[in-house]
Amino acid sequence: MKLAKYLLAGFVVAASAGAAHAQAAACQPLKTLLASSHAQVKALQGAKTASDKKTVTYVSKTQVPGMKDCTIESSIAIDPFTDYWEHHLACSAETANSETATQTIEALWACTRDVFSERQPNEAWVGGKYRVIGFDAEVPTKGRASGLVSFGDTDYARVDVEKPFDTSEEYSLHLYWMFTK
Image 1 (cartoon, rainbow, N blue to C red):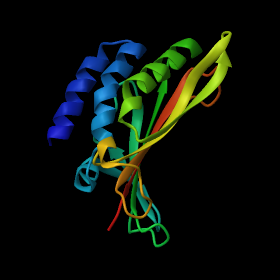
Image 2 (cartoon, rainbow, N blue to C red):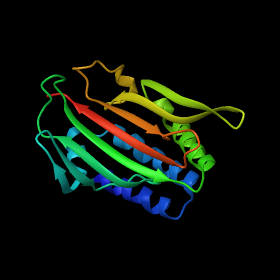
Image 3 (tube, rainbow, N blue to C red):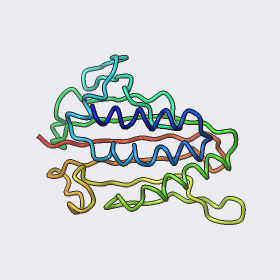
């Protein structure tokens, strides 16, 4: 419940801010989401919107500041090949122009990059220099200090933030949680 209250406070701040300010407001909530336990992720599941044999999709009880239409897709059972319970938070965003979207992603990258144990920016040549238009990174849910991700043994979160192409004013956030048995 503390997580939901914390994120709600961030949303109130973001509601009155512009895109760059919204990303600054999204920074700490994203860090908090990355460290979520399996129970905390399940608590973020709102109304069920779809399902199939392997997954159920829910409206997310939390909306990341600066983003919209957040959903959580959760596996019904442990994946027999990876031995992980898998959850996926997906959100989208759109800004007034491409430059604002790039600035927003760069701000989010700058404020979160030190929490990841493994990370990679996606850069494109924009306006005469290389700009970060996306990034992907991983971190154990117990934090960077707990070491690198050891697949099959570590509960971890993976984040992917990106523009579909360098001149797009749209971008998306995908946060994947992988929990062991």
